[in-house]
Length: 436
Image (cartoon, rainbow, N blue to C red):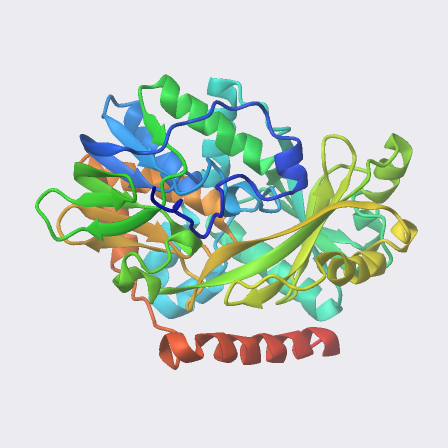
């Protein structure tokens, strides 16, 4: 008798979180066993893989998704649930670094991910508590000027969904003394991220797609004319391979693992609050994040829990006491919540690229990849999924723009990327604390 195969996902079930506890029912999907062949194989059943697969399945392609754990097990099922337009790197940074043409191109798609999510929810009746609007908050007047500059720059590219809020106006959305003001993006929003992933998986299967769960990939041959993906119990040969493992792809494809670094962020969920108390804290029910380098982000769940997240741990490790770490931050924003019961606390990894710009490209002739959303993957992954599907169908116009954007390794390579990033975060965190 052989020993059971273990992996980064343990037994493969979703880690304990509010999202897992409130997930919609989903079918048990079998692992990959034996040798198979298919037109398109996708590794990873998170947003990138599901978005790519659903776009292609709707066009009639035969597709299999191989997932190491369960649908939405990684960042797609654990994130803040916020639909935030844009990339981690600002439009100003992209324009300065890559030129006006690239900035204009990126500005034309920064709202696309949110539009795709809303279209999927409507078309397939996905029950994921989708709500409108997100707010960026500023703690200082210097940060208010940053937001004013952001709104002006986005308006110069024809994006007019944003509105500045002074301290008093912000009170209609966030009842906290901490902030100097903020900016509301009416085209943003929030939802239950795991239920969105589960709904997209069901839509993919409805269109003829196949999902194999509990099948960690142990080897990939992307140099063959027909790429091959191997798991402990089977293999899949395909005409086209798409790698969407992101922070959890590990070292299966060494040329990709060097491009990004796993970074963990944490969340917790309070006990359900009364309707009166919930509306006192967040009157308009928008989601919120501040604009510090190491930020807080929070929103209300459908059952009026405060979902509060923040912090980063470079390298992907979990802090020893998530509740204690986040409780201090939440008490600064909402002293009214001191002493509230915390029902859930969890952690998860996202993939950070050194440039903070997500990466898309090909390795070999028939293997595509997308990763490195750097904490802005909810919208970016849906957009990249569509762009990947376009490229696979033969239209590489948008794919080539991202594929040609230079990527940069972390200074010092893999050995020193964590201490380098920690030093950088300490410096920017100090600037935040000093208000400069």
